[in-house]
Length: 446
Image 1 (cartoon, rainbow, N blue to C red):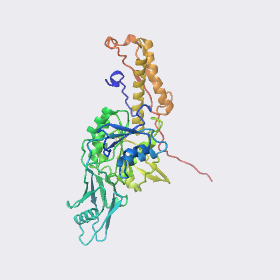
Image 2 (cartoon, rainbow, N blue to C red):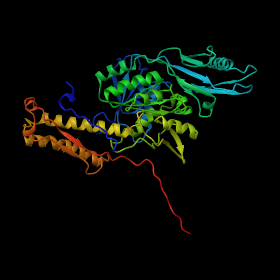
Image 3 (cartoon, one colour):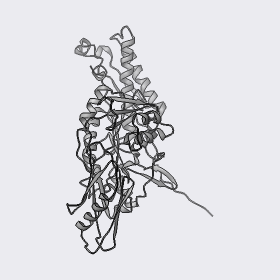
Image 4 (cartoon, one colour):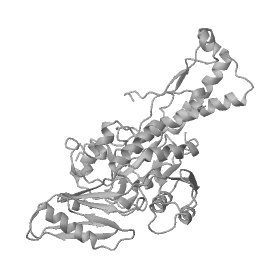
């Protein structure tokens, strides 16, 4: 039996617009677990050192992501790793954009090594793809990857083995002459998450490391159904280079079209920046309702020098960035999910629902009986009001905005009385919101 079968809470957000167990706990979905780790179980860690001992090696993406979480100050006291059993085979697609003129240099970084090609006398897209693929094949990589430019339209970079992790980096300047994205198929991320969740549901925020469009969209589908929060990094350059009107292909477009209110995207130039992990690490220690996700400094994460057009393209698609503004390294001014809901609102409402459910269940379990009387109804009313008032105290709800209405027992239907179901019980509260921008007009008199 689910808790919601006993205590059902539904909250509707109007246009007028706890940190409880699990609401500060991130889970990294990993495929590089050592032998001996049972598939689709979780491991819990309280330090970077402890996790690194289980995920050794400088190339472990899980250890790198966890290091970004634990580097924040304060950081979550607990990080969980879920062991996936359906690893993706990573694929990157790099597409030169031109102009294809003699002497033009095309370059990107792969696993920390520069892949570069200078256009010769053959001034075609196919020649550029062939040249870049040859330069990539000349690299010494561990683990290895194949570079294929035979399509004549793009370079396909494919991991040799499923679960191998590689990092592509296309700088903002390079993205003006070539696009790049992680493009592998979804191997079954929802299946892994569902099985992990059965074994351990005591976590709230998901972090994934193989973020192609298909993979992120599939993970979002599971998150939306299971009321978790998902922060995903994308390195798809078209997210920043295409306007919202011209974008019909990126992960940003797909999530926005599906009104994904539980998935937040952050666009970065490098696959191994793990800004999503760092962002979770920076915000999850804060009590739900007391925070925003905008203007956050992320320790050990490099900023991106997107130009103004690129920045505005991302914001218009409800995608977050990490840039340097007036000397400050901060996440962008929106702090929203792909469905254009503030991330803090989603987390706060989830925590309020959990608090009410848990507190009422605790009262039902700890008392010999809560009578089906007006006194019993007032006990339920007081529990709900106390949780709403805590939401006011923490800054999630506006002061003195919380109200709870319980029925007079004489007015409860005979069917509900027979079922021992106190209904209807309603509450209302006003979100406090947050200041994330201001307009100032001043007058200076000589």
